[in-house]
Image (cartoon, rainbow, N blue to C red; front, side, top):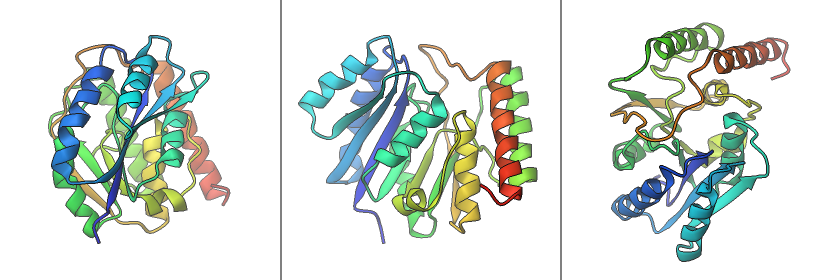
Length: 235
């Protein structure tokens, strides 16, 4: 049975250069998806550049737009966890606030929920720096070895799922490992995962904080901590 309602949510941190374009793109795409019941949710993770004011202004004019704010920056993982908890619809989709995908690709992804519980995208062309390509290769390999998650692009921010997946799993990640933990937990609970190729749109404005040795190390430590707890029966 196809979902009758949809949440599209965006974790947001200092994205004032991008957020107006995101809101306009959502306005263009939603009518094409055919949902009468939907919400556009922004999780503001302690932004300081005024992007929250842009979203608040749109929310005053559009009842479908909603924002939840963290008083302080808590990290990408916690922003996603807040979005998962706050989402109200039968189907939940998230991507990043620099809009790395065309939301019209949801037209291809939504029908997959008839046979799958979670749909994850993978980039047709990755457009990565050498450092980030190495990080991604190691990360995806560890996900296969440690958790048996065999998808092409674990951390790509194109994920669509039934709300029941989020109601069943327990997420604790504070780093970008949250994407991997989501897939590992969904698989552990027996949910069906489908993959879909997506045309990736590299960031043009603002900057990413993910391409650093510190972030990679924090993600690795959180992944290994989760693996230890899982094997001790505590995850």
